[in-house]
Length: 295
Image (cartoon, rainbow, N blue to C red; front, side, top):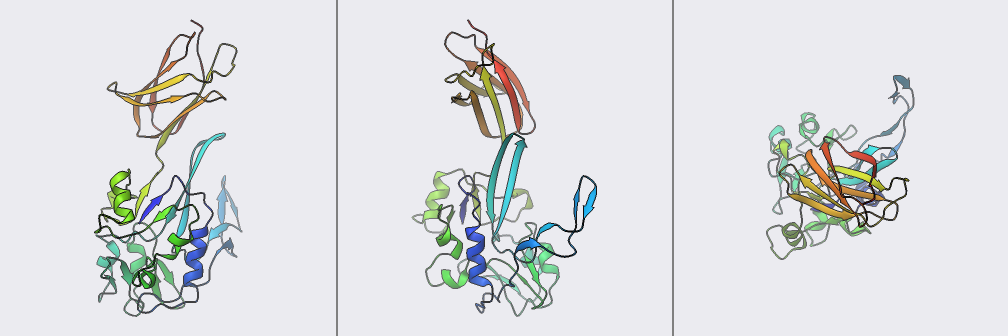
């Protein structure tokens, strides 16, 4: 599966489609029905805001086999928000398989990691074994549960429900062993990567547009008027060009997808002196107004 996080609009359609497919529906031998739980206020939940504990909190209760993580970067009003659909990662080196007993977690012939709803009964150690936190415990059935990549559909040549539902075509699914499949071509032509490679789980869910670090700023003249059309070049510590962009009509420019480290900005515009500025990038940074001086 390949997920384009930079195109997701956070509509929750994949989340709802997953609920629609699994709540109250058994698909033996792949899965038992998921419980009917949803977002909302729940009695007894607590939340801490500035040291004050409130008795009612907005929480995610129960199971979300396809969840949505919202990542907010920067500081107000210079914010960027990215939403990432988060299913089971169907890892090649799945920690949950190691934690399970009696073959309760296995890979099917398509490489999909599945939890046997019978053999897994009572195996409470399984949810905590997942470093991604995408295995849930069903108290009523006394079993762990998670995304199955809709194995019951894939086995008949169909897509997982979330793939067909996504109106933005953010989620792509296919056979990595087939070089002509959509996901194989996608991976070959894009900068796809996995979430948390340091876990060593070797996920089979890849992402494009995982949020990294950005630099933003505004180019103005000595009277604080915007200078659209100015060229901004970003160079790394060794002097290599990282990227070039043009200041927009509101004086703004931005470089995203950066790693932390030392950079140099160079801003040029006809009739103005070229200005350079060093940036030690450790987190998302808004540089504020950068004034150019008339030549």
